[in-house]
Length: 293
Figure 1 (cartoon, rainbow, N blue to C red):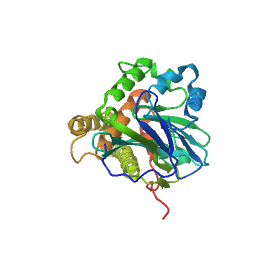
Figure 2 (figure 1 turned 120 degrees about the vertical axis):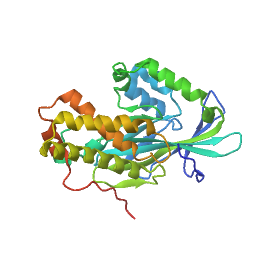
Figure 3 (figure 1 turned 90 degrees about the vertical axis):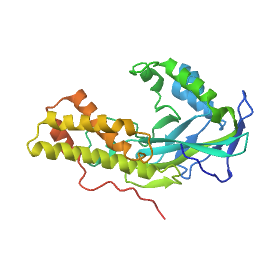
Figure 4 (figure 1 turned 45 degrees about the vertical axis):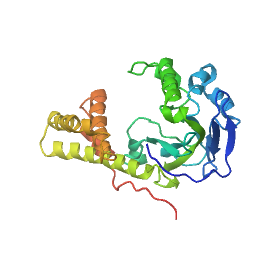
C-alpha cells in the first residue's frame, strides 16, 4: 500500500453506489487505445455481462475494486497497474491502493524465441478483468473451480467481496476514484504516471528471472547436477521467504519469486529439456523500460 496526496480528478466520470453514500469516479487512461471501464462508467455492467454471462454477479460483487481493461493498440501489454484512490469520510485524507500485474516471462529470450506458456499478458484485441484480489479473462470464474486453495471457485469471490466490504478503508470511504496507473508494452515503453512504481517492480522481476535462468545454465555447464542447483534454490527460498513484507524487501521479493517459479517449472515439466529451455530463455540484451519525455 502506498499513501500519497492525489490531485483532484479532472474529466472523470462520476456515479454513486446504490448501497452506500460512496461516490465513484473513473479516470480515463492517457492512451485512448487502452480502454478502461470501471463501476463508475455507465457501460460497466453491460460489458461485464458480455464477458461473464450468467456468472456476472460473481464478479460484480467485487465492486468497486474491479475494472475492465481492453487493449485496442497494436502492441502487447506485458505489465500494468490499476489504482484506487480512497477519500476517507472521517478526516478527508486519501489513500492509494495499487494492483500490479507483471508477466516477466513474456519478455524472456525475446518474443521470437519465447517458450513459456501464455500468462496474463494482454495481446492486441484482448480484454482482461483486474481487481484488488483477482485478474483474468472471461474464463476467470470457471478456472477458479480448479484453483488449489480453500475456498476456491465462486466461494473465493464471495469471501473476497465480504473481506473488502468490511475493510476499514472502505467502510470509512466517502469517495473512490479508480483507473489505470501505468502500462508497459513488449517493446519496453512505459505509459502513465506510474505512481505505483510499476517500472521498478517489473524490471526487478525480469532481472531476477533472468538471473535464475543464467545460474541454472552456468552451474550445470560447470559440472553441478540439476538436483544440486535446485537444492540451492530451495535453500534460498526457505531462508528468505520469512523476510518477505519486511522493511527493505519491496523489490528483493522477486529473487524469491523467481526461484519459486523455476522450482515450479521443473516440477511441471521435468529435467529432460530443462537446461536447454532456460538457455533459450536468456535474453541477448537486458529488457529496458523507457518512457517518452
